[in-house]
Length: 162
Image 1 (cartoon, one colour):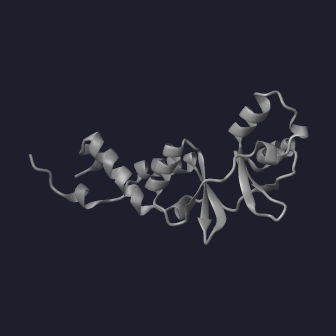
Image 2 (cartoon, rainbow, N blue to C red):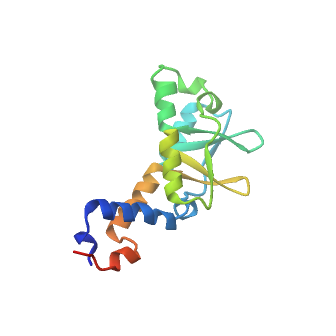
Image 3 (cartoon, rainbow, N blue to C red):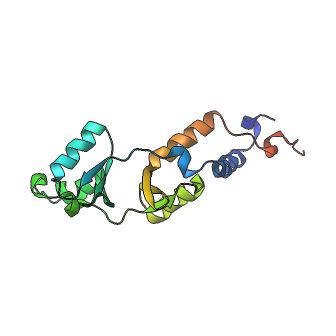
């Protein structure tokens, strides 16, 4: 039976359930772009523009991740307050701590974590080291690819009772 012949709620459930075959490692963005905690916020924004990314990981003087700065952080903590970015540091603007998940967590759990915590980005850790990031748009991209080529399931091949 073709996927298009099934009821929409059934196909949506199959797509959602099939997210369990994908793990955080499958859509993790790496390497991570970092900036020192003492860097001026205008440098943070410039680095985001050059690298074409919406976030930067803030590191301590020892090089350990300590927070994240997103485009939203810049908008709400700098622009909305009419602050001068060159006089603020990354540490002043960052969100801390970075919320993380393990590399082998299913994408469905990753999406639920983001939704429950109302965040757009998660750090991905392996052996207590931050190895990458996942954003909401990474999950949406995965879903859009699944809609074009949905995974096969036994339910799709089973005859339907009339």
